[in-house]
Amino acid sequence: MHPNGPANPGSGRSSDASGDAGAGMMGEMMGRPRKELYPSLMEMPVLSPEQRRNLESQARGRINGEIDGIAAAEMDLRHAIAAGDVVAADRASGRIRYALDGVQSGVTVLRSLIEGMSPPHIAQNWFKAQMNLRPQLALVDTDGMLGVSWFHVATMALLAIFSAGMLAVYVARMRRANALVDRLMRVPAPTSSPASSPSDGASSVTSATSRSGAGGGGLPTLDKVGSAPDLHRGPARPGEFWKGKLRIAAIYPETPGVKTFRLQAADGGCIPFSFLPGQFLTYAAEIDGKTVRRSYTIASSAARTAYVETTIKREDGGLFSDYMHDKVREGDLLDVMGPSGAFTFTGAEAESVVLIGGGVGITPLMAAIRYLSDIAWPGQIDLVYGAQTTEQFIFRDELEYLQRRMTNLRVAATMVRAAGTSWMGSEGQITADFLRRAVPDLAKRRVHLCGPPGMMEAVRKTLGELGVPPAQIKTEAFGPARGAVPPPGKAVVEMPTPNGDGGREVAAAIGPATASIRFARSGKVAPLPPDRSVLEVAENVGVPIDYSCRAGVCGICKTHLLEGHVTMEIQDALTEDDKSKGIILACQAKSVGNLVVEA
Image (tube, rainbow, N blue to C red; front, side):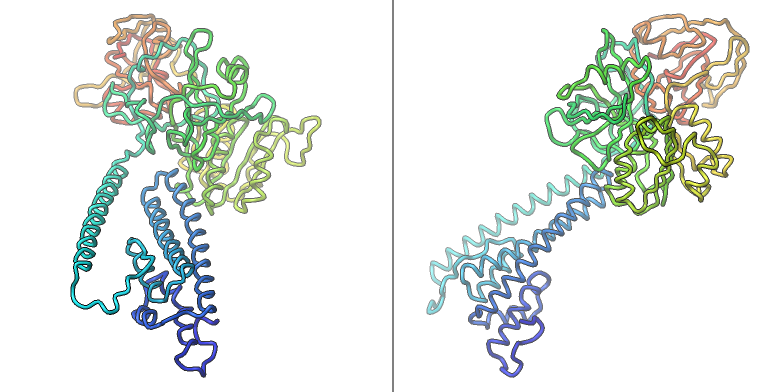
Protein backbone atom coordinates (compact mmCIF):
# COMPACT_ATOMS: atom_id res chain seq x y z
CA MET A 1 0.00 0.00 0.00
CA HIS A 2 1.36 3.40 -0.94
CA PRO A 3 1.50 5.64 2.12
CA ASN A 4 0.45 8.77 0.26
CA GLY A 5 -2.77 7.63 -1.34
CA PRO A 6 -5.41 4.89 -1.46
CA ALA A 7 -4.87 1.80 -3.53
CA ASN A 8 -8.22 2.28 -5.19
CA PRO A 9 -8.90 5.97 -5.81
CA GLY A 10 -12.38 5.28 -7.05
CA SER A 11 -13.66 3.68 -3.90
CA GLY A 12 -14.14 6.96 -1.98
CA ARG A 13 -14.07 7.02 1.82
CA SER A 14 -14.09 3.30 2.48
CA SER A 15 -11.55 0.81 3.67
CA ASP A 16 -9.00 2.43 1.34
CA ALA A 17 -9.42 5.79 3.02
CA SER A 18 -8.92 4.20 6.40
CA GLY A 19 -5.95 2.38 4.97
CA ASP A 20 -4.42 5.67 3.95
CA ALA A 21 -4.81 6.96 7.49
CA GLY A 22 -3.41 3.75 8.90
CA ALA A 23 -0.41 3.80 6.58
CA GLY A 24 0.41 7.37 7.55
CA MET A 25 -0.25 6.83 11.24
CA MET A 26 3.14 5.35 12.08
CA GLY A 27 5.03 8.27 10.63
CA GLU A 28 2.79 10.75 12.43
CA MET A 29 3.12 8.93 15.76
CA MET A 30 6.91 9.07 15.66
CA GLY A 31 6.98 12.84 15.37
CA ARG A 32 4.44 15.53 16.24
CA PRO A 33 1.04 14.19 15.04
CA ARG A 34 -1.12 16.27 12.75
CA LYS A 35 -4.36 17.62 14.14
CA GLU A 36 -6.42 15.28 11.93
CA LEU A 37 -4.62 12.12 13.14
CA TYR A 38 -6.60 11.53 16.30
CA PRO A 39 -10.07 12.14 14.72
CA SER A 40 -9.21 9.78 11.85
CA LEU A 41 -8.11 7.05 14.26
CA MET A 42 -11.03 7.52 16.58
CA GLU A 43 -13.45 7.33 13.65
CA MET A 44 -11.79 4.22 12.22
CA PRO A 45 -13.73 1.20 13.61
CA VAL A 46 -11.37 -1.56 12.51
CA LEU A 47 -8.12 -2.13 10.63
CA SER A 48 -7.98 -4.56 7.76
CA PRO A 49 -5.28 -7.30 7.82
CA GLU A 50 -3.38 -5.39 5.15
CA GLN A 51 -3.49 -2.18 7.20
CA ARG A 52 -2.26 -4.02 10.31
CA ARG A 53 0.61 -5.58 8.38
CA ASN A 54 1.54 -2.14 7.04
CA LEU A 55 1.51 -0.61 10.52
CA GLU A 56 3.57 -3.49 11.92
CA SER A 57 6.14 -3.14 9.12
CA GLN A 58 6.49 0.60 9.69
CA ALA A 59 6.71 0.14 13.46
CA ARG A 60 9.53 -2.39 13.13
CA GLY A 61 11.33 -0.15 10.65
CA ARG A 62 11.12 2.75 13.07
CA ILE A 63 12.42 0.64 15.96
CA ASN A 64 15.42 -0.57 13.91
CA GLY A 65 16.20 2.97 12.77
CA GLU A 66 16.10 4.35 16.30
CA ILE A 67 18.30 1.49 17.57
CA ASP A 68 20.93 2.50 15.00
CA GLY A 69 20.59 6.07 16.23
CA ILE A 70 21.14 4.95 19.81
CA ALA A 71 24.35 3.13 18.80
CA ALA A 72 25.70 6.19 16.97
CA ALA A 73 24.79 8.52 19.84
CA GLU A 74 26.39 6.16 22.36
CA MET A 75 29.67 6.23 20.42
CA ASP A 76 29.56 10.05 20.28
CA LEU A 77 28.88 10.08 24.04
CA ARG A 78 31.95 7.88 24.71
CA HIS A 79 34.15 10.17 22.61
CA ALA A 80 32.79 13.29 24.31
CA ILE A 81 33.37 11.87 27.80
CA ALA A 82 36.91 10.79 26.85
CA ALA A 83 37.66 14.31 25.58
CA GLY A 84 35.99 15.97 28.58
CA ASP A 85 33.53 17.79 26.27
CA VAL A 86 30.48 18.25 28.54
CA VAL A 87 28.42 20.09 25.90
CA ALA A 88 28.89 17.33 23.31
CA ALA A 89 28.12 14.72 25.97
CA ASP A 90 24.84 16.48 26.79
CA ARG A 91 23.85 16.57 23.12
CA ALA A 92 24.65 12.88 22.67
CA SER A 93 22.68 11.86 25.78
CA GLY A 94 19.71 13.92 24.51
CA ARG A 95 19.83 12.03 21.22
CA ILE A 96 19.79 8.74 23.11
CA ARG A 97 16.71 9.81 25.09
CA TYR A 98 14.93 10.98 21.93
CA ALA A 99 15.72 7.69 20.14
CA LEU A 100 14.48 5.66 23.13
CA ASP A 101 11.16 7.55 22.93
CA GLY A 102 10.90 6.54 19.29
CA VAL A 103 11.63 2.91 20.13
CA GLN A 104 8.98 2.96 22.88
CA SER A 105 6.32 4.39 20.56
CA GLY A 106 7.05 1.69 17.99
CA VAL A 107 6.93 -1.05 20.62
CA THR A 108 3.59 0.33 21.89
CA VAL A 109 2.09 0.11 18.39
CA LEU A 110 3.37 -3.47 17.99
CA ARG A 111 1.93 -4.51 21.33
CA SER A 112 -1.41 -2.93 20.53
CA LEU A 113 -1.54 -4.73 17.20
CA ILE A 114 -0.63 -8.09 18.78
CA GLU A 115 -3.36 -7.68 21.38
CA GLY A 116 -5.92 -6.99 18.64
CA MET A 117 -6.81 -3.49 19.77
CA SER A 118 -8.97 -1.16 17.72
CA PRO A 119 -7.52 2.00 16.12
CA PRO A 120 -8.87 4.25 18.95
CA HIS A 121 -7.19 2.02 21.56
CA ILE A 122 -3.92 2.07 19.58
CA ALA A 123 -4.00 5.87 19.43
CA GLN A 124 -4.69 6.17 23.16
CA ASN A 125 -1.91 3.71 24.08
CA TRP A 126 0.58 5.54 21.88
CA PHE A 127 -0.37 8.86 23.42
CA LYS A 128 0.08 7.45 26.92
CA ALA A 129 3.49 6.07 25.95
CA GLN A 130 4.56 9.54 24.81
CA MET A 131 3.36 10.98 28.15
CA ASN A 132 5.24 8.29 30.13
CA LEU A 133 1.91 6.79 31.29
CA ARG A 134 1.15 3.10 31.51
CA PRO A 135 -0.53 1.95 28.24
CA GLN A 136 -4.01 0.60 28.88
CA LEU A 137 -4.47 -3.01 27.99
CA ALA A 138 -8.26 -2.98 28.01
CA LEU A 139 -10.67 -0.05 27.92
CA VAL A 140 -13.65 -0.04 30.22
CA ASP A 141 -16.83 -0.05 28.22
CA THR A 142 -18.61 3.08 29.34
CA ASP A 143 -21.62 2.66 27.08
CA GLY A 144 -24.81 3.03 29.05
CA MET A 145 -23.19 4.54 32.20
CA LEU A 146 -24.83 7.89 32.91
CA GLY A 147 -23.92 10.43 35.54
CA VAL A 148 -21.09 10.19 38.05
CA SER A 149 -20.79 6.95 39.99
CA TRP A 150 -18.60 5.90 42.88
CA PHE A 151 -16.54 4.00 40.35
CA HIS A 152 -15.79 7.26 38.54
CA VAL A 153 -14.97 9.03 41.82
CA ALA A 154 -12.59 6.26 42.89
CA THR A 155 -10.98 6.20 39.45
CA MET A 156 -10.44 9.96 39.43
CA ALA A 157 -8.99 9.82 42.95
CA LEU A 158 -6.54 7.11 41.93
CA LEU A 159 -5.60 9.11 38.85
CA ALA A 160 -5.01 12.19 41.01
CA ILE A 161 -2.80 10.22 43.41
CA PHE A 162 -0.94 8.70 40.48
CA SER A 163 -0.43 12.12 38.88
CA ALA A 164 0.88 13.55 42.15
CA GLY A 165 3.28 10.63 42.47
CA MET A 166 4.51 11.06 38.90
CA LEU A 167 5.00 14.78 39.52
CA ALA A 168 7.04 14.03 42.65
CA VAL A 169 9.19 11.56 40.70
CA TYR A 170 9.69 14.09 37.93
CA VAL A 171 10.75 16.80 40.40
CA ALA A 172 13.20 14.41 42.06
CA ARG A 173 14.69 13.43 38.71
CA MET A 174 15.10 17.06 37.68
CA ARG A 175 16.86 17.86 40.95
CA ARG A 176 19.26 14.98 40.40
CA ALA A 177 19.86 16.09 36.82
CA ASN A 178 20.54 19.68 37.92
CA ALA A 179 22.93 18.46 40.60
CA LEU A 180 24.80 16.39 38.02
CA VAL A 181 25.05 19.37 35.65
CA ASP A 182 26.42 21.52 38.49
CA ARG A 183 29.06 18.90 39.26
CA LEU A 184 30.09 18.68 35.62
CA MET A 185 30.33 22.46 35.34
CA ARG A 186 32.65 22.52 38.34
CA VAL A 187 35.17 20.10 36.74
CA PRO A 188 38.54 21.90 36.93
CA ALA A 189 40.58 22.36 33.77
CA PRO A 190 44.14 21.00 33.70
CA THR A 191 46.52 23.49 35.27
CA SER A 192 50.08 24.11 34.29
CA SER A 193 51.94 24.56 37.53
CA PRO A 194 51.16 22.78 40.77
CA ALA A 195 53.45 23.08 43.75
CA SER A 196 55.13 20.13 45.32
CA SER A 197 54.46 18.53 48.64
CA PRO A 198 56.01 15.65 50.51
CA SER A 199 54.67 12.33 49.33
CA ASP A 200 52.00 10.90 51.60
CA GLY A 201 53.83 8.24 53.54
CA ALA A 202 56.08 7.12 50.69
CA SER A 203 59.61 6.13 51.54
CA SER A 204 62.45 8.21 50.21
CA VAL A 205 63.61 7.39 46.71
CA THR A 206 67.27 6.58 46.54
CA SER A 207 67.51 5.15 43.05
CA ALA A 208 65.67 6.27 39.95
CA THR A 209 66.16 6.38 36.21
CA SER A 210 65.00 8.91 33.65
CA ARG A 211 61.85 8.55 31.55
CA SER A 212 61.81 6.48 28.42
CA GLY A 213 59.45 8.03 25.97
CA ALA A 214 57.79 11.33 26.42
CA GLY A 215 56.95 13.58 29.30
CA GLY A 216 55.09 16.83 29.13
CA GLY A 217 53.68 19.27 31.59
CA GLY A 218 50.12 18.15 32.42
CA LEU A 219 49.90 18.55 36.17
CA PRO A 220 47.84 17.79 39.23
CA THR A 221 45.73 20.65 40.49
CA LEU A 222 47.05 22.21 43.71
CA ASP A 223 45.51 25.06 45.64
CA LYS A 224 48.70 26.52 47.09
CA VAL A 225 52.36 25.79 47.64
CA GLY A 226 52.78 22.87 50.00
CA SER A 227 49.24 21.45 49.64
CA ALA A 228 48.73 18.33 47.57
CA PRO A 229 45.50 16.96 46.11
CA ASP A 230 43.71 13.99 47.63
CA LEU A 231 45.14 11.28 45.43
CA HIS A 232 43.16 8.42 46.98
CA ARG A 233 39.59 9.59 46.75
CA GLY A 234 38.59 7.34 43.81
CA PRO A 235 38.12 7.87 40.07
CA ALA A 236 39.59 11.13 38.81
CA ARG A 237 37.55 13.52 36.72
CA PRO A 238 38.92 14.95 33.42
CA GLY A 239 42.01 17.05 34.11
CA GLU A 240 42.63 15.61 37.57
CA PHE A 241 45.66 13.76 38.91
CA TRP A 242 45.10 10.19 40.15
CA LYS A 243 47.16 7.82 42.27
CA GLY A 244 46.48 4.15 42.97
CA LYS A 245 46.99 0.62 41.68
CA LEU A 246 46.28 -0.80 38.23
CA ARG A 247 46.36 -4.46 37.20
CA ILE A 248 48.54 -5.79 34.39
CA ALA A 249 45.90 -7.31 32.08
CA ALA A 250 48.16 -8.31 29.18
CA ILE A 251 51.73 -8.01 27.91
CA TYR A 252 52.41 -7.83 24.16
CA PRO A 253 55.86 -8.10 22.53
CA GLU A 254 56.31 -5.41 19.90
CA THR A 255 59.95 -5.79 18.78
CA PRO A 256 63.01 -7.38 20.37
CA GLY A 257 63.47 -5.37 23.55
CA VAL A 258 60.12 -3.54 23.39
CA LYS A 259 56.89 -4.65 25.10
CA THR A 260 53.45 -3.11 25.51
CA PHE A 261 51.80 -3.39 28.94
CA ARG A 262 48.01 -3.16 29.06
CA LEU A 263 46.65 -2.01 32.42
CA GLN A 264 43.09 -2.11 33.72
CA ALA A 265 41.34 -1.02 36.90
CA ALA A 266 42.29 -3.25 39.83
CA ASP A 267 38.65 -4.20 40.50
CA GLY A 268 37.44 -4.23 36.90
CA GLY A 269 35.46 -1.59 35.06
CA CYS A 270 36.75 1.51 33.31
CA ILE A 271 40.15 2.99 34.12
CA PRO A 272 39.77 5.45 37.04
CA PHE A 273 41.01 8.56 35.23
CA SER A 274 40.77 10.43 31.93
CA PHE A 275 43.77 11.45 29.84
CA LEU A 276 44.72 13.19 26.61
CA PRO A 277 46.72 11.72 23.70
CA GLY A 278 50.41 12.25 24.49
CA GLN A 279 50.26 12.30 28.29
CA PHE A 280 52.25 9.90 30.47
CA LEU A 281 51.94 7.82 33.64
CA THR A 282 54.49 7.41 36.43
CA TYR A 283 55.07 3.92 37.83
CA ALA A 284 56.61 3.10 41.21
CA ALA A 285 58.00 -0.19 42.51
CA GLU A 286 60.25 -1.53 45.24
CA ILE A 287 63.43 -2.73 43.51
CA ASP A 288 66.33 -4.04 45.59
CA GLY A 289 64.80 -2.48 48.68
CA LYS A 290 64.45 0.97 47.15
CA THR A 291 61.42 2.80 45.78
CA VAL A 292 62.07 3.53 42.12
CA ARG A 293 59.84 5.65 39.90
CA ARG A 294 59.76 5.84 36.14
CA SER A 295 57.48 7.69 33.73
CA TYR A 296 56.22 6.20 30.45
CA THR A 297 54.05 7.67 27.75
CA ILE A 298 50.53 6.33 27.29
CA ALA A 299 50.40 4.69 23.87
CA SER A 300 46.71 3.72 23.73
CA SER A 301 43.82 5.83 22.49
CA ALA A 302 42.21 8.26 24.92
CA ALA A 303 38.84 7.15 23.54
CA ARG A 304 39.30 3.67 25.01
CA THR A 305 38.14 3.61 28.62
CA ALA A 306 38.50 -0.10 29.39
CA TYR A 307 42.30 -0.04 29.52
CA VAL A 308 45.43 2.07 29.18
CA GLU A 309 48.70 0.93 27.57
CA THR A 310 52.35 1.94 27.82
CA THR A 311 55.06 0.68 25.49
CA ILE A 312 58.43 0.23 27.22
CA LYS A 313 61.87 -0.37 25.74
CA ARG A 314 64.50 -2.31 27.66
CA GLU A 315 67.35 0.15 28.20
CA ASP A 316 71.01 -0.54 28.85
CA GLY A 317 71.35 -0.31 32.61
CA GLY A 318 67.69 0.60 32.91
CA LEU A 319 66.71 -0.54 36.40
CA PHE A 320 62.97 -0.02 35.97
CA SER A 321 62.73 -1.19 32.35
CA ASP A 322 64.53 -4.42 33.32
CA TYR A 323 62.04 -4.83 36.18
CA MET A 324 59.08 -4.38 33.82
CA HIS A 325 60.46 -6.79 31.22
CA ASP A 326 61.71 -9.49 33.61
CA LYS A 327 59.62 -9.36 36.78
CA VAL A 328 56.15 -8.08 35.94
CA ARG A 329 53.56 -10.69 35.00
CA GLU A 330 49.92 -10.61 33.96
CA GLY A 331 47.72 -10.15 37.01
CA ASP A 332 50.30 -8.14 38.98
CA LEU A 333 49.29 -4.84 40.56
CA LEU A 334 51.40 -1.78 39.77
CA ASP A 335 51.52 1.56 41.62
CA VAL A 336 50.57 4.28 39.16
CA MET A 337 50.05 8.02 39.30
CA GLY A 338 49.05 10.48 36.59
CA PRO A 339 48.20 11.42 33.97
CA SER A 340 50.76 14.16 33.36
CA GLY A 341 52.11 15.87 30.30
CA ALA A 342 51.36 18.75 27.92
CA PHE A 343 52.72 17.12 24.75
CA THR A 344 49.17 16.48 23.59
CA PHE A 345 47.18 16.62 20.37
CA THR A 346 43.43 16.00 20.26
CA GLY A 347 42.62 17.46 16.84
CA ALA A 348 41.31 20.73 18.26
CA GLU A 349 44.72 22.42 18.20
CA ALA A 350 45.14 22.50 14.39
CA GLU A 351 43.48 21.37 11.17
CA SER A 352 46.42 19.06 10.36
CA VAL A 353 49.51 17.72 12.11
CA VAL A 354 52.96 16.33 11.32
CA LEU A 355 54.23 13.76 13.82
CA ILE A 356 58.00 13.11 13.78
CA GLY A 357 59.41 10.37 15.98
CA GLY A 358 62.48 8.28 16.50
CA GLY A 359 62.74 4.89 18.22
CA VAL A 360 60.42 4.44 21.17
CA GLY A 361 59.58 8.15 20.89
CA ILE A 362 56.80 7.01 18.58
CA THR A 363 54.60 6.15 21.58
CA PRO A 364 52.94 9.57 22.16
CA LEU A 365 52.57 9.97 18.41
CA MET A 366 50.87 6.57 18.17
CA ALA A 367 48.52 7.56 20.98
CA ALA A 368 47.45 10.57 18.92
CA ILE A 369 47.01 8.53 15.72
CA ARG A 370 44.92 5.89 17.49
CA TYR A 371 42.72 8.52 19.11
CA LEU A 372 42.23 10.50 15.89
CA SER A 373 41.27 7.26 14.17
CA ASP A 374 38.74 6.43 16.89
CA ILE A 375 37.00 9.81 16.60
CA ALA A 376 37.22 9.83 12.76
CA TRP A 377 39.14 13.13 12.73
CA PRO A 378 39.12 14.51 9.16
CA GLY A 379 42.42 16.44 9.25
CA GLN A 380 45.61 15.39 7.46
CA ILE A 381 48.05 13.31 9.57
CA ASP A 382 51.66 12.81 8.45
CA LEU A 383 53.89 10.46 10.46
CA VAL A 384 57.63 10.67 9.82
CA TYR A 385 59.48 7.92 11.67
CA GLY A 386 63.08 6.85 11.98
CA ALA A 387 64.45 3.63 13.48
CA GLN A 388 67.87 2.00 13.46
CA THR A 389 66.72 -1.13 11.62
CA THR A 390 63.50 -2.65 10.31
CA GLU A 391 63.64 -5.12 13.20
CA GLN A 392 63.11 -2.16 15.56
CA PHE A 393 60.15 -0.65 13.67
CA ILE A 394 57.62 -0.39 16.52
CA PHE A 395 53.91 -0.75 15.58
CA ARG A 396 54.80 -1.52 11.95
CA ASP A 397 51.92 -3.93 11.30
CA GLU A 398 49.34 -1.66 12.92
CA LEU A 399 50.55 1.41 11.05
CA GLU A 400 50.30 -0.45 7.74
CA TYR A 401 46.73 -1.42 8.63
CA LEU A 402 45.78 2.11 9.76
CA GLN A 403 47.28 3.64 6.63
CA ARG A 404 45.05 1.39 4.50
CA ARG A 405 42.02 2.27 6.62
CA MET A 406 42.58 6.00 7.18
CA THR A 407 42.63 7.99 3.95
CA ASN A 408 44.04 11.00 5.83
CA LEU A 409 47.10 9.18 7.26
CA ARG A 410 50.46 9.11 5.46
CA VAL A 411 53.50 7.30 6.88
CA ALA A 412 57.07 7.96 5.77
CA ALA A 413 59.73 5.86 7.49
CA THR A 414 63.48 5.50 7.08
CA MET A 415 65.76 2.80 8.53
CA VAL A 416 68.29 0.14 7.60
CA ARG A 417 66.92 -3.23 6.49
CA ALA A 418 67.73 -5.92 9.04
CA ALA A 419 68.70 -9.41 7.89
CA GLY A 420 65.67 -11.59 7.31
CA THR A 421 63.23 -8.69 6.92
CA SER A 422 61.77 -6.94 3.90
CA TRP A 423 62.06 -3.20 3.34
CA MET A 424 61.52 -1.13 0.22
CA GLY A 425 61.53 2.26 1.93
CA SER A 426 64.19 4.88 2.56
CA GLU A 427 67.34 4.18 4.52
CA GLY A 428 69.40 6.42 6.75
CA GLN A 429 68.48 9.27 9.04
CA ILE A 430 65.70 11.84 8.84
CA THR A 431 67.26 14.52 6.65
CA ALA A 432 66.01 17.76 5.15
CA ASP A 433 65.58 16.13 1.76
CA PHE A 434 63.59 13.27 3.30
CA LEU A 435 61.33 15.73 5.10
CA ARG A 436 60.75 17.77 1.92
CA ARG A 437 59.66 14.68 0.03
CA ALA A 438 57.51 13.33 2.88
CA VAL A 439 55.72 16.60 3.72
CA PRO A 440 55.99 19.20 0.93
CA ASP A 441 53.99 21.84 2.86
CA LEU A 442 55.91 21.30 6.11
CA ALA A 443 56.54 25.01 6.79
CA LYS A 444 52.78 25.63 7.17
CA ARG A 445 52.06 22.68 9.45
CA ARG A 446 51.99 22.07 13.21
CA VAL A 447 54.81 19.65 14.15
CA HIS A 448 55.10 17.29 17.12
CA LEU A 449 58.61 15.92 17.65
CA CYS A 450 59.67 13.15 20.03
CA GLY A 451 62.73 10.93 20.16
CA PRO A 452 66.23 10.53 21.58
CA PRO A 453 67.94 13.83 22.49
CA GLY A 454 70.49 13.75 19.67
CA MET A 455 67.86 12.98 17.06
CA MET A 456 65.56 15.72 18.39
CA GLU A 457 68.27 18.36 18.34
CA ALA A 458 69.22 17.48 14.75
CA VAL A 459 65.62 17.41 13.49
CA ARG A 460 64.73 20.66 15.25
CA LYS A 461 67.66 22.38 13.54
CA THR A 462 66.60 20.89 10.19
CA LEU A 463 63.02 22.09 10.67
CA GLY A 464 64.30 25.60 11.25
CA GLU A 465 66.31 25.42 8.03
CA LEU A 466 63.14 24.34 6.20
CA GLY A 467 61.29 27.43 7.41
CA VAL A 468 59.15 25.89 10.17
CA PRO A 469 58.56 28.61 12.81
CA PRO A 470 59.66 27.55 16.32
CA ALA A 471 56.14 28.29 17.66
CA GLN A 472 54.77 25.51 15.42
CA ILE A 473 57.15 22.88 16.83
CA LYS A 474 56.07 20.99 19.95
CA THR A 475 58.66 18.71 21.52
CA GLU A 476 58.62 16.07 24.24
CA ALA A 477 61.28 15.96 26.96
CA PHE A 478 63.13 12.68 26.61
CA GLY A 479 65.29 12.11 29.66
CA PRO A 480 66.74 14.23 32.47
CA ALA A 481 68.24 17.65 31.94
CA ARG A 482 71.97 17.82 31.47
CA GLY A 483 74.54 20.55 32.07
CA ALA A 484 72.27 22.74 34.15
CA VAL A 485 75.10 24.42 36.10
CA PRO A 486 78.07 26.40 34.77
CA PRO A 487 81.55 25.24 35.78
CA PRO A 488 82.86 26.38 39.20
CA GLY A 489 83.79 30.00 39.35
CA LYS A 490 81.74 32.89 38.04
CA ALA A 491 78.16 31.83 37.36
CA VAL A 492 75.24 33.79 36.00
CA VAL A 493 72.20 33.26 38.21
CA GLU A 494 68.94 32.53 36.34
CA MET A 495 66.58 31.90 39.29
CA PRO A 496 67.25 34.02 42.40
CA THR A 497 65.06 34.53 45.42
CA PRO A 498 62.40 37.27 45.05
CA ASN A 499 63.13 40.82 46.11
CA GLY A 500 60.77 43.18 47.92
CA ASP A 501 58.78 44.38 44.90
CA GLY A 502 58.12 40.91 43.51
CA GLY A 503 60.73 41.25 40.76
CA ARG A 504 63.86 39.18 40.25
CA GLU A 505 67.50 39.99 40.85
CA VAL A 506 70.22 38.93 38.45
CA ALA A 507 73.66 38.71 39.98
CA ALA A 508 77.04 37.10 39.61
CA ALA A 509 78.22 34.59 42.17
CA ILE A 510 81.68 33.31 42.94
CA GLY A 511 81.81 30.34 45.24
CA PRO A 512 83.48 27.05 46.04
CA ALA A 513 82.97 23.91 44.02
CA THR A 514 80.89 22.35 46.81
CA ALA A 515 78.33 24.32 48.80
CA SER A 516 75.71 23.16 51.31
CA ILE A 517 71.95 22.93 51.32
CA ARG A 518 69.65 23.13 54.33
CA PHE A 519 66.17 21.61 54.20
CA ALA A 520 64.19 23.89 56.53
CA ARG A 521 61.17 21.69 57.18
CA SER A 522 63.16 18.49 57.67
CA GLY A 523 65.98 20.17 59.61
CA LYS A 524 68.71 18.41 57.61
CA VAL A 525 71.90 19.86 56.12
CA ALA A 526 73.94 18.21 53.35
CA PRO A 527 76.76 19.04 50.91
CA LEU A 528 75.59 20.33 47.51
CA PRO A 529 78.01 19.52 44.67
CA PRO A 530 77.55 21.76 41.61
CA ASP A 531 76.63 18.78 39.42
CA ARG A 532 73.88 17.45 41.70
CA SER A 533 70.30 18.69 41.78
CA VAL A 534 68.35 19.60 44.91
CA LEU A 535 66.19 16.50 44.35
CA GLU A 536 69.19 14.18 44.13
CA VAL A 537 70.66 15.52 47.37
CA ALA A 538 67.26 15.30 49.06
CA GLU A 539 66.98 11.63 48.07
CA ASN A 540 70.43 10.86 49.48
CA VAL A 541 69.63 12.34 52.92
CA GLY A 542 66.07 11.04 53.15
CA VAL A 543 64.15 14.28 52.60
CA PRO A 544 60.86 13.47 50.82
CA ILE A 545 60.22 15.60 47.73
CA ASP A 546 57.58 14.20 45.40
CA TYR A 547 58.48 13.97 41.73
CA SER A 548 57.48 12.31 38.47
CA CYS A 549 59.30 13.14 35.22
CA ARG A 550 62.68 14.39 36.57
CA ALA A 551 62.87 16.45 33.37
CA GLY A 552 61.51 19.82 34.46
CA VAL A 553 58.15 19.53 32.71
CA CYS A 554 55.64 17.99 35.10
CA GLY A 555 56.05 20.41 38.02
CA ILE A 556 55.42 17.86 40.76
CA CYS A 557 58.80 18.55 42.43
CA LYS A 558 58.16 22.28 42.94
CA THR A 559 59.44 23.65 46.23
CA HIS A 560 60.23 27.04 47.80
CA LEU A 561 63.75 28.45 47.58
CA LEU A 562 64.17 30.38 50.83
CA GLU A 563 67.81 31.48 50.46
CA GLY A 564 70.42 31.35 47.73
CA HIS A 565 70.46 31.27 43.95
CA VAL A 566 70.03 28.33 41.54
CA THR A 567 70.24 27.62 37.83
CA MET A 568 67.77 25.44 35.93
CA GLU A 569 68.24 24.33 32.34
CA ILE A 570 64.57 23.39 31.88
CA GLN A 571 61.80 25.40 33.54
CA ASP A 572 58.77 24.45 31.44
CA ALA A 573 56.62 23.76 34.51
CA LEU A 574 57.21 27.17 36.11
CA THR A 575 54.96 30.14 35.49
CA GLU A 576 56.12 33.74 35.82
CA ASP A 577 54.17 33.92 39.07
CA ASP A 578 56.05 30.85 40.37
CA LYS A 579 59.38 32.46 39.55
CA SER A 580 58.47 35.72 41.23
CA LYS A 581 57.59 33.80 44.42
CA GLY A 582 60.86 31.86 44.50
CA ILE A 583 59.42 28.49 43.42
CA ILE A 584 62.01 26.13 41.93
CA LEU A 585 62.00 22.70 40.34
CA ALA A 586 63.98 20.43 42.65
CA CYS A 587 64.88 18.04 39.83
CA GLN A 588 66.55 20.87 37.86
CA ALA A 589 67.83 23.27 40.52
CA LYS A 590 71.62 23.30 40.97
CA SER A 591 73.94 25.82 42.57
CA VAL A 592 77.54 26.73 43.31
CA GLY A 593 76.46 28.53 46.49
CA ASN A 594 74.66 27.70 49.72
CA LEU A 595 70.91 27.08 49.58
CA VAL A 596 67.97 26.87 51.97
CA VAL A 597 64.82 25.19 50.64
CA GLU A 598 61.48 24.60 52.30
CA ALA A 599 61.39 20.77 52.04
